[in-house]
Each structure stands twice: as structure tokens, then as C-alpha cells.
Image 1 (cartoon, one colour):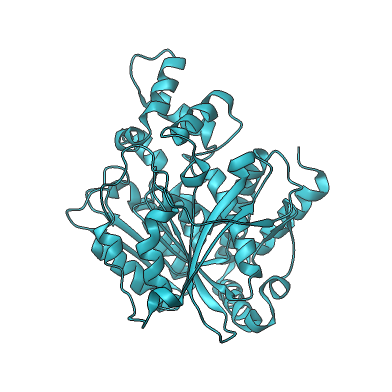
Image 2 (cartoon, rainbow, N blue to C red):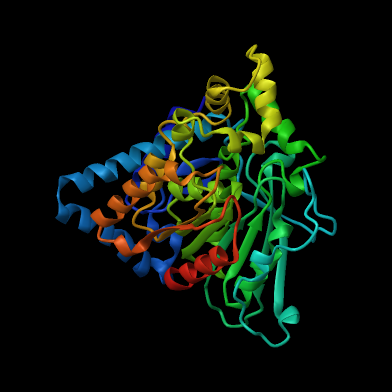
Length: 421
């Protein structure tokens, strides 16, 4: 159990986070540091201005907006409680270990046979001698005492710049069964345009995997034992700790940290931004889904098929002849508590307001059905409108596209970051 004092600090920090003062995770628990202290003097005016605008607008517009702030505070607090419930040792100081470039990346499932045309299309800036000017950092963040899963592999690219200037950051997250090295075309493209680009290996992927079935094995173990949350939630914890590290770097503008990802990476971006307001611009790509809607409307099959061995094991354990709605619901409840209820898209996505958010989807995506996005998109649009930030929210469903990141999506994401970050 979390000590009472540590929990009190956690709750206090999340109350601040609801008013856009970024939470600071250190020593394994949340501490309520001020925005000025954690962001640094040179960024203080911009961050305070952003936070003050939200609070002032809400106060001026009536009590309902203040109620929304309270609701966001409570929901974040509940989600943090879930994350803390599976942490084995909270007294782990954030530490950095040196790493090396990965020569033979680990891909699970069916390895990709070539490069991604969509990622290769990401706009680049022509930089003379780009390869020579590109700085690559490989390192590990110790996020908790959990062996390799508590050791977060990070790949960071930036241009060598002798001027002491803080730069914006874009965190890019990979899809299921891939790894951070797969994202290199995107990382290089953003770095060429002056961003610091960052990728990680999510839990049980890349350097954190030891076999072709590590991720699936972890999902099965979570179903059997209930002691980890390898589907989405554990990686969100890592992304909070990554936010700690980025906010402390002298080359990073801590008020300008964007986050995006594809498929599973899009879900990671969604939940990390929902909980941690330091992620100031958010672009989930084919990652937002109404989990409860899928259960209620019998549209869960495509998502289940992406990690089917997990559900087959649950089916057998539950004595079922086939995977059905009950199996799906019990799996989500066990491995990601609240995913299909209080933390589902209709409730968590609107809480990202007023930070700029672009949702990109395929109109024919079976894993993230557009019909299941009507409610979260409608609620999010209302939330942004209520705080005077309607222009900072956009939803695009690309016609004729299924569960696929396209050239158009990559361009839309790139333009969104250039506009708001």
C-alpha cells in the first residue's frame, strides 16, 4: 500500500495538474512542485499564461466550467491511483544509464519487410551535411524496480546546435510488436526541422523483449496474475517518468513537449496526455477507441484479433466455447481496470482540453470504429468550445482507410505540431 503521506502528495499534485500546473514525479511518488520550479524561469511566463487563461476563462464563463476542472482533477486522480496500485516499489529515484545504438532491433509477430512509405513521407528540412550534424542519444531511464521492464530504453535525435537554445520536443510512440528504431524516419524528419525527437520501447517491446512472443506472454501473465498492466497503462507510467527527464534537460523547452503515436502508440499518447499535462500538443493516430461502445455494439472483434492469444487463454479459463462479450469485458477489467468504463474515450479524451489535440483515424478502421468515436469527439469538441479553444481540436476520418497510418495522416500531424508546438 502507498503510505498516507505519499498518497496525499499524489492527490495534491493531481489537483494542481487539473489547473495545468505540471505534476512532478520524483523518488517514485508524485510531489506537488510549482509550475515555476519545475519548468524553469525562462519558460515561466509562457506556461503561467497558458494555465491562467484556462482558469480565468472557466471562472468567467460560469460554474459549469469550474465543475469540469474538478471532474478532470478527480478522473486523473483515479487513474493515477490505478497506476500506483501496480507499482512494486515507489521509492525509486529517476536515474539515467548510458545506452548504445541497437544494431538488430527486435520485432515481434511478423517482422516488417521494408520501410514505411507513410513515415518516409514526413516533411523534412534540407540541412547541409545532415547526417554529420545529427546528434543521437541512446540511454535508459530507470522508472521502477522491475528488471528490464523498469528500464525504459530511449532514442533521442536532434541537430547539433551550439546556441544555448531550448527546443520543442516530439515524443513518437510505436505500434504493437514494433520498436523505437522502426520510427527513425519520423525522428530524423522532425529533427531536421529543429525539434528534439524522442522514441521509446513500450513495455515488453524492442529492447524490453527477449523473444517473438514477449508481449503476448506478458498479456497472458497479466490475465492470470493481475500484477501488471502491459496493455497501455504500464507504458503510461514510463511516459510520466520520461516527462520528468525531458522537463529537466537544459536543451528542452518544458512547455513545448508534444506527443504522438500510431495504433498502440496512439493509445499511449492519449492516456499519457490525459494524465500528464506537460504533454502540451497531442496527436493520436489510429489510436482512439470507445472500448465500452465496442462491447455494447458487438464491435470488439478487430481489437481482440490484434492480441487474440490473450483472449483465447481467457476463454479457456472461463470455460467458454468461443470468445464472447463477457470474455472481452473480463479481460479489460483484469489487465486495464477502468479502460471500458471511467477512463474510456468519452470521459478521458475531453479532459485533454484546452491543449491542442488532433485525432486522426481511418473512416473504415475496424479497430477504432468511427461510430464508436462519435461520443468522445462530440464531448471533446464541447469541452474545447467551453474554454474558448475550439480551434485547438480537430478530428479527421480519412475516407476509404482502415487501420492504417497514411501519408495524409503524417502530413496532418506534422502541420499540427508546426502550428501549435
